[in-house]
Length: 212
Image (cartoon, rainbow, N blue to C red; front, side, top):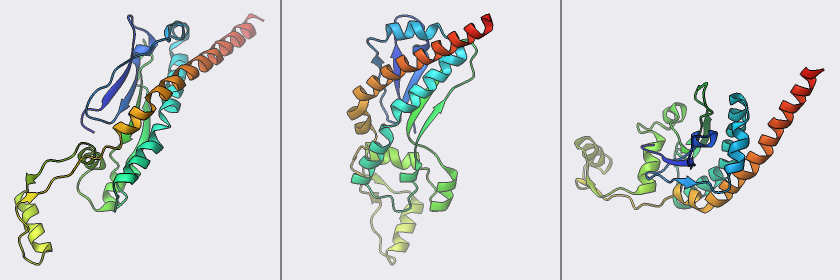
């Protein structure tokens, strides 16, 4: 929704980890320097591109997984989704754009558009828009003419005023991220080591078999 924040693994040179991104659905970017990942980066560079993508895809998905239930729990503690549209639109999406020269992996956690849920809810606004309003708040504002007419009709013909009172922000996405970031980075480091070792063992077995 809008401009998602980016979690970038950054180093002094271009490596596979420079193209590993975690998108957290929030309005301001967050950037991390991943200390202690130098050896893992060098090992990852030694793998073939497809192996790098396999490793980074699994790392991205598994390290982001704990964020999802926390976001949903935070949302349910502060808000009520009457139609179920918003609460059922939380998801994790991991994508690997086609690129033959480096492993580019994106993990996104948050609220996503879902046409089926939108149609079933009878709403005209996508869930990520609602999520943005609830996460960041909405200032009091004048209602559009159509909204004023609808308000007047639903109130028995009595005018309810020309302003929306606004919405106080009760964030549920950013707090989940902030509370879990250290654990998430620790999971990334552990998984990178384990999965790189598995790929190296796979390569060694293949090389041994081909040498026979």
